[in-house]
Length: 224
Image 1 (spheres, rainbow, N blue to C red):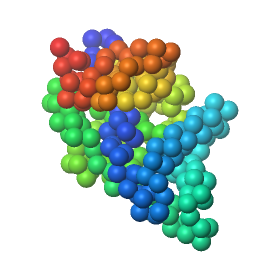
Image 2 (cartoon, rainbow, N blue to C red):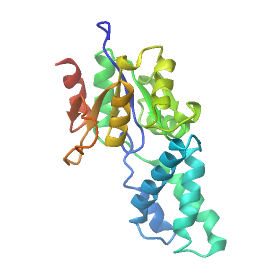
Image 3 (cartoon, helix red, strand yellow):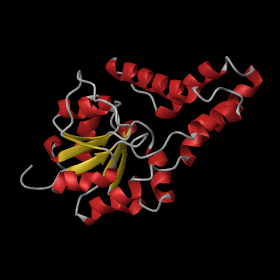
Image 4 (cartoon, rainbow, N blue to C red):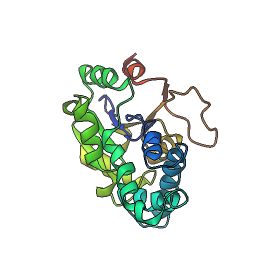
């Protein structure tokens, strides 16, 4: 790393944003709350499948498509479009996890460059961080929509490295998702797994360089 500190690259959905309120969006339209988790997992599965086949689709398009399939079991066809729009709109209203603002500010105060890299749109990250008053702490908000492939494909991480004018080995992927940690590690990045739930790390993925329970621990892990 040539003696320079790594550039932390933050995943957005679930790593920075608290997606728990999405359950209420499903309930609002008459669907079970638990469908929120199934929806997000299915969305990711289909995004990964497309990436593995060399295809690419936006998070929004996939999200809407999966929603229509899931909500058909609970809603009549005439109500589907409005329900899909209501649920998707929830992404623009999600809060940050409580540890995020302080953790971000501590990293910036310690001199780290900060960027995001999301499988979602950059606009979602923009709204999320601006609402919390920490948008200016980030140098860039990156989306795989400009990379040509979803994470965890190597191409996505290479796009982030090019955007920051550093090598992959000079970047640190920060995420709650072990699949993202594994992808970044295989690409040559260092990694930090945010384990807020206190669950074991899957032993079939590359181990994270650092494990923290909140972002407020990250600056100590990187500088201590």
